[in-house]
Image (cartoon, rainbow, N blue to C red; front, side):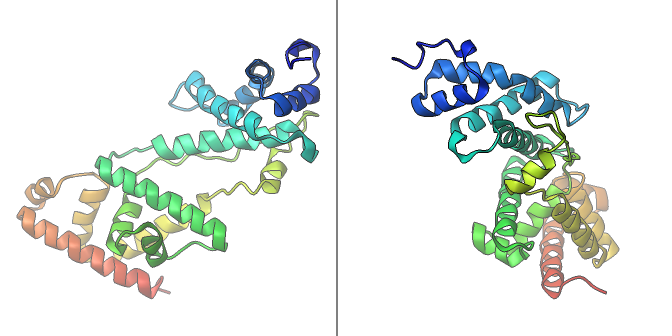
Length: 258
């Protein structure tokens, strides 16, 4: 008997999941996607109104649904929705994280900033505490100045409130508990602390240097444009930025001021 002898519509959810786990039949996979698509719609709806269209975000959540279908083990005894919902929410979170820039830094700096963000998330998950600038730099192969520059670029992004509440098979609001069981990490507090710490570091700079740093990383001006704005040469601006980042690195090594 082949996996498609029994029509997927005739199988219950658990039976369909078990059959797909055994056979990896694409017909069954398609049937599971169709059956759980309302859960993907629910996942997107938990994020409220966004600039991006609902259909675009539904596609992102559907990618998470496919991953959940392919990775789910029916023998572990957990409800599929308790596994799939956090997976879809995580996919939407990553989409916002990777695409929600309010100020567009140069492409190479964007990529560097995202790499720093992911490395910080990974080290935080491994050690239970946010890593230092030096630890991130060593893990990713960058200088500490590069890490500080990347973190300042991250401050120009729009962060979304990512605290949705979902449902399980019984219609109960339990996806927060499911996320805790599945160790889904919410790094919003760490990011807020990073932004606060960076604000402390820039306030230690002289006013002119602080303004040049702001123009570079908040307004995304080139060094030449900054020079025109403040009446300095591009080379002078470059030296100020280099010295400012070095000063911030030294201050970061000392830790927050009382």
